[in-house]
Length: 468
Image 1 (cartoon, rainbow, N blue to C red):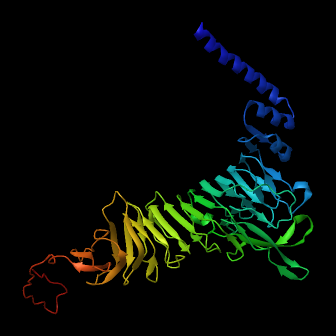
Image 2: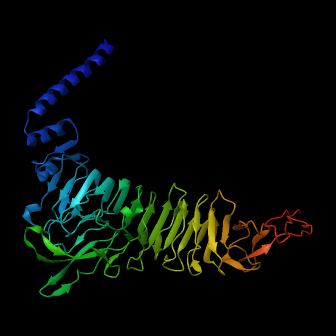
Image 3: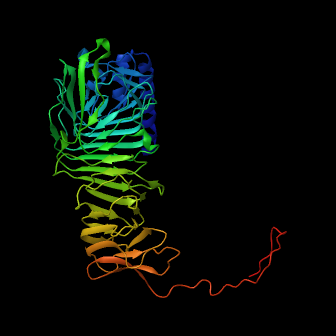
């Protein structure tokens, strides 16, 4: 009896679903979208459907799927208002044409498997507004503008209905993400707010009001592909100036530009690079109380050469990282971490580097400067490591030269990987914490003697045997 009941119920459910499916195909588009939500969590939106109505019907966690291209128009025919998304939804399908002045979130939102096309330059951006913005397999349309991303919100946007801010601004890029179009434009990622100013209004230029994004920001780049498809990461906010209206095409506007002095972040900023990464990470926040921390944990062994500017801490958890020669650390209290199995190459930096605390266990590559690295704070090792392996980028090491100054280090913290031509060279710590090169033992004699017989080569010959 029990077996018969279990096998009977699914067949009844299947019959009911088939009946619903037949009914669904006979309904007009507006009713079809409503009926689909009764049997699942996916809204299918066609070209004739009203996105505002669909969003109103949707519940938290639902999916909005656009079919065969869809255009989101100005809310209320106002061409300076953004599209406000107030529910935790996933938006997919595409392409999606945006005639709104940007997108701002009032909840966590995911864009997945979609092509975004901003139609004009006024706020070609998505603002997480203190919520979580996820892009997964998202591209920028060739005909559209590059897409800029903000952890913060919109300041001085002249809009009446701004959504409530969340408690932590977060951007995460997954799969394949491109913020670049084929015309050379590429979008950037910002930890702060987007602030609106005025350009060429009554003959003068007016900046937006100075502001600060006051909650934590997190940018996770876990996408794969060409790093050129992503712009720079800025730990601050940005400004865009807008001008007079230009017919039905919206308004004149300038490109979005960062300004860490006026558009600050006043809480910590975290940038995590797990995938291909970006070429530039600028840690300037505009606030002495706000730090920018960079964590790199790439699975690839290919050399990653970003430009890191004013970074407060750098952790290389996995991968092979060489900051470019233009890289800088914010203060001498900046912290460095090189985990076991990871490599941090500082040889490209033009000057000697001074940091605060150092945690090692991996491989540290230094340039041939004296000292190449000064550590003012503590020196720690990963519990699974015996020492930080040190490689010196030089064809020949000078004996007695100081490469690391670390007063609070202990013997065994660093271990030199000797070059092939100086196999007995080691790093040894003196009583002041200076790590100097020293020859350990007698040099290895590879050839004890070499003798060649006298050979006379007649002028008429072009070659001769020369026995050893």
